[in-house]
Length: 261
Image 1 (cartoon, rainbow, N blue to C red):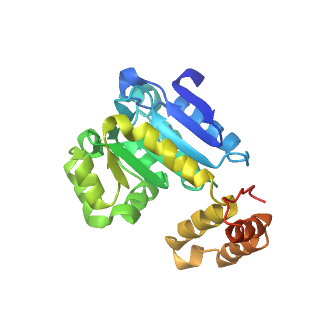
Image 2 (image 1 turned 60 degrees about the horizontal axis):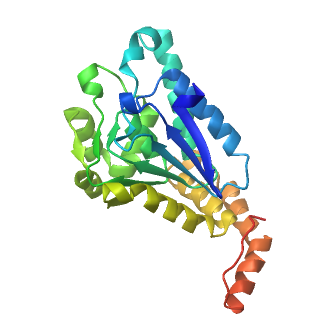
Image 3 (image 1 turned 180 degrees about the horizontal axis):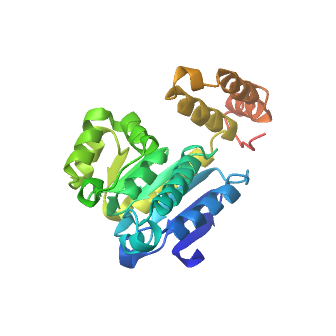
């Protein structure tokens, strides 16, 4: 299954690539399990400064679940529960990954692909990209967490339109909703994602980690927010060697070299 989920590094940038282009990178349960294992390994590697998720072949990011596997993976209540639990684990793992995550969206972004992209911090796509959640055409139900993450990004009205109509939406429609950060020429998506990732990698990791953690806390219910942990993240920045390096580099008019310490 490893050949259907690829990993590599570009300096401090990690890549996870969904590699089933003949099926528009549709995802089976085993593929989700492989991604989960990859996330668990990568999050403990402090040399990683950003993570890019993409699809192989240049024509699709992720086209949702592999429908050919429905009878073997999602025909029973137990199978549905197992599949949903694993996809939730992956989405949460991406959303709570300690470093920034970027969705590199080439071509189709369908069903679970939209959920995966919504879990990322930043989303870039090509001008021919198309988006859809065809659950209503398949009789599928979406759990609270998946819908809520989309509502947090684009609001309830657009979320309802996407689900109710089950139609395809263009890149321009998705950027107008606030789902996409930037639309690029199809041939420029990969290089731009890497450019942004390297820009992030050059900045102070503790500041970025604190910002991601606090931003994620902002959308939680008041009773669920951990303000103590938020404050600790901020104080970790001020107590770090990187804070000294940042101030010193500014005074010396040079580019700082941050180590995440």
